[in-house]
Amino acid sequence: MRKLSYREIKGSAIGSDDIIAGNVSKYTVLPAGYCGQPKKGHLIFDACFESGNLGRVDHITEFEYDLFIRPDTCNPRFRVWFNFTVENVKESQRVIFNVVNFSKTKSLYRDGMAPMVKSTSRPKWQRIPSKNVYYYRCPDHRKNYVMSFAFCFDREDDTYQFAYCYPYTYTRLQHYLDNLQRRNMDYFCRELLGLSVQKRQLDLLTITSPDMGCR
Image (tube, rainbow, N blue to C red):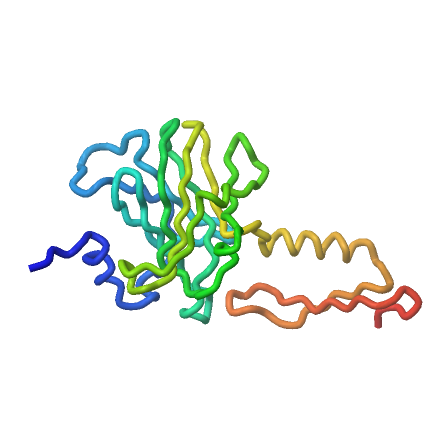
């Protein structure tokens, strides 16, 4: 009789995407059977912030983690975006992160795009080298598409943040539109069109030529 792999045992518990109900919040990932206090190198994941997305983390080995992203609001079949932080790292700790439940069959990750990373001491976003990024269909995850990337943590006191691409939050957008509105430009008009499912305002922007004005 064939023994089931760890991934097959864990994967069988995922009957549908709505099992991943919320983001991880300061979630410490410990090896199986470990009962003591978390040590340096036991990674702590967090996605409870604006634009964050990471619903579940599985410890595969000391060097490998499977990451499950939550689906889009009102569209459980669409899973692409991720944005999360990692802390409590060890210097020179090498890891492989597998984002295991992508919904897209085609991705720019196949053509050289790479995830973004920044850290406490290096606050500017930069791309992970594309040679360390792989996008493929994985039989261990119900033939879902998986994006794997390798990374080496180099500063123990830093918190690292990883994202699908450059994040642009709702709050940042609202601040930008507020600044435009305060300039009272006669060719720019901002109106409230409605509210989203999550009660965020949907803006209707009208931009016309200066001589026409905004009615």
